[in-house]
Length: 201
Image (tube, rainbow, N blue to C red; front, side, top):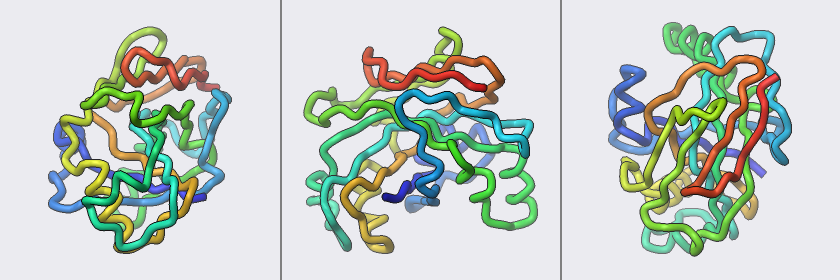
């Protein structure tokens, strides 16, 4: 199982970090040790003082595929959930300034909490989602605002990497990212369904 993450897939998020809006999907990867499930707590890493939340819809790949045509991409996932792409923003900023890869800021242990998966046919179109921290909504998103649709993302990734059953794709975060601190409670929703609920330790 691998975790593939799409960067800068919402215009307002790209702008809030002063990044250019991409002309094609940008992706990076997290190892399986980043995955955090069953609402287990997230432990702040000792190497960062600025860990940010980025709430994202997550696709679960349901069949083997490579060089997938966009018009068939929908056949390659059947379930959707919500997750958090935790980012050590201070480390990421340093890596960007030096022109270095930034997996160190994205791929650390526990940096990819994922909630319960739902069949995609149970969800509205567009899919609406949001993140609450300590009962206050901090991020809201809609698939209507994606720069690159789920199907475009799957087709693009599959030109470079074979997708296998069980792989996860984080599809990008909307605007509103920000820091988390110890004892924060994060609750992530698709529509009005609470799918992810955990503490920061």
